[in-house]
Length: 539
Length: 66
Image (cartoon, each protein chain N blue to C red):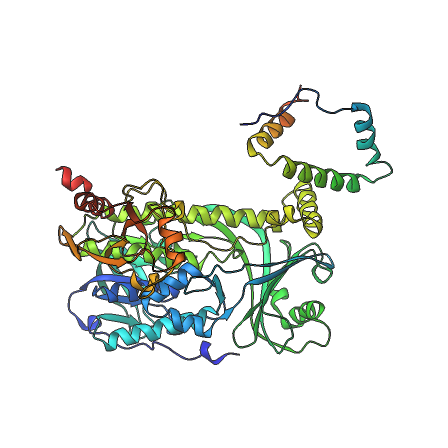
């Protein structure tokens, strides 16, 4: 068993808050130190927002869990200062094979587009990501940022008030109370916070079980994603094989609904299944075994007054498509800058409703994709199985059927069309970067574009001069000026046929508005829209 | 926008129909079901136009119901 599971990363230490006579009020308290909670804490601390993170244990999560991280979340991790650690450790892959019965029916190459700093995907055990995030958090602490990670602090009760939250927290040395202006619940799919507040979590349950076996083996398999439909070693079901760092392989075997979970988890039952798949002589060790069922569901609202939900606590999807941890990181990316503006009194509280709106849009997109993958992998009727098998048979010979094969549509970021924060669009600029879209990376005259964006409002001026600084209501817009000819990728992605363009970029690297030329009053109006200050203006 | 053609469009209608049945001659129900599914997918891709496909699906759904 991997030692990382056993080592306390943030051991319990008594906090001065436990000795206070009256509950201490903290600005932001985050519940849960998984990837989402840690990312939120780092993001806020980098913006000089004091933050307390409570976790009910003191170690990284047990088992590999999330293993596939997509380009956009890697860019978010870059902004947080730990993307490089993840990419250095992670396994890069872009090839996949699809098998049906005994045949390989086709293979694909995701052929990552040139001109991006980050690859389309890496595979990395969740515990490594959590370790890198904790290391980054320690680095920020050493720089003097006010960030307090409290291990073995388990929230046992929550009281909600209009403008704060009160928590009762159990520790090895007994309970204490703590108040928070804002609470961010990142405590996972079974969120105790959600349960204690009696909030809904509605969706569709899929009657299926999957066995995850992360195995350590010296194997000849290439670094590819292999997916089987109805293979001889798991008749009538599916299987997945995918490589992680340290010679750990993720094996995912569909088991069906009517099984004895306890029995299936036993090594004497798991090992023969793996041997049937890998060959009688395969030498492997089990690193982690788990059986999961899944649901596709979300909360009706991610914001409940001063309590904000992010990651699996707010929405849950099937694992096919790597949309769990990836979307959780996109949640905090969206939330933290808004919360900071509200905390600093620069934007109204209602700005946080746009978090709800934009990330529910993202969650619904993920749930839709995830549900469709699941329906393809596990046909729900005789007819859907007939069509599924027809697609697979045709895909072997005909290219047209391959886009219909759905073993998981891999996570791509949402474009928040219709967001209340979106400002004007300019006709003629490339549609992929319309307001609401995340930045698309490209080489510039001074390194990668994504490395130059984020953490503040910026005016990305390509081939046009703009003022270095603009300001409205205490919010500053910094100029990022890039020559139109900096790179063909930049021109293609941001200009299309235009000679120049001006993009207002949000602190989360999303496009707020764009124009063909600079107009100060238009930029400032778009800034007000992007920070939810439109109604205040009207007053 | 193209519309679904519902006027007679196949030259040699009887021959086509015979060929269609021939496809299923001596097949089991499950073989026939699989052939039909592959045939639908091949034809749907040939048509390509989502509006036409949707119209065909609706007409298939709504005819034959009494």
